Image (cartoon, rainbow, N blue to C red; front, top):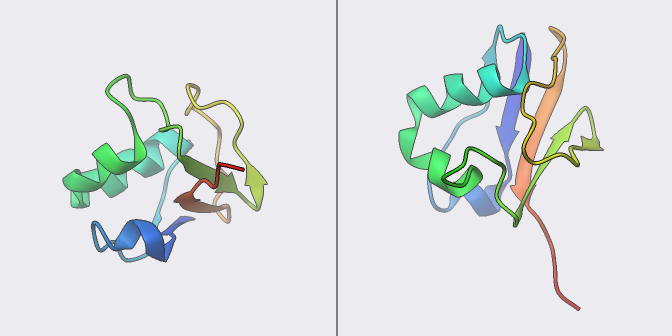
Length: 89
């Protein structure tokens, strides 16, 4: 099962325990999470269904650069971590 975890900074807004689910894609894993915690969707995705500018998604430690394409295939042991992205100077 793929594993999804949120950084503590995002959990201040919506408490979300780690989730493990059978998911063929990142989109499916996120949909499973949002089904349990609907309020979290607005913190992670914009109204177009893209990852928000100030959110970073990591799959197995690698930053997801394409914020629009969420049909990233996941293997059973993949780990997804979502955090607030740092920006500024």
